[in-house]
Image (cartoon, rainbow, N blue to C red):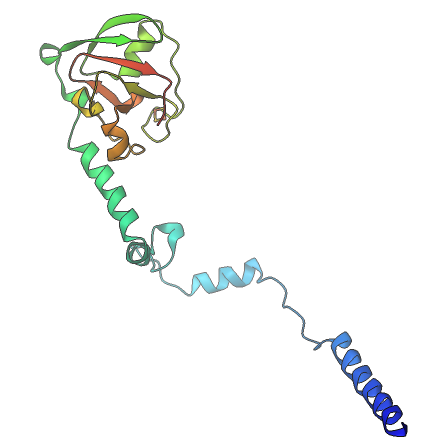
Length: 194
Ligand code: FES
């Protein structure tokens, strides 16, 4: 009985010391944020370079590591860019080379002739249609439409650097009208994104 009391007392004392120790902490304090002055001083010791520093993604570096880790994504992006560019320059089509194609805008209930040197979006607007858009550079999907004539949209339009639709979406007939130039007759539903 006496032993139990002594043991309880000892345990209480030990636990008290432990509690006090943790309550006081380690006295370690986080340092202040690195000042701008210090950053400037460090930057001034690094020579200017014309190429991206490894891992410095803010100026375009770190690509190697990203490619190594996310190789599939990198390849896909390269594929998209390579495919859609293809050296296509609609402004190089001279007046006597311009071809016209019949395009039906299903929702608007209009069928008009579109030239192959201007975008579907631009020509639809010129015809008085109120069509959706945002960036007008192939970098969002605000202007997306669905070509319902069957098959891949690129059987009907040529994209000038579209960066949003993948092969499967093109296959399903989707197009970005702001960078799509007609190469055949087709029917399109505007305002339809994949
Ligand atoms: S408006 Fe953004 S991709 Fe056409």
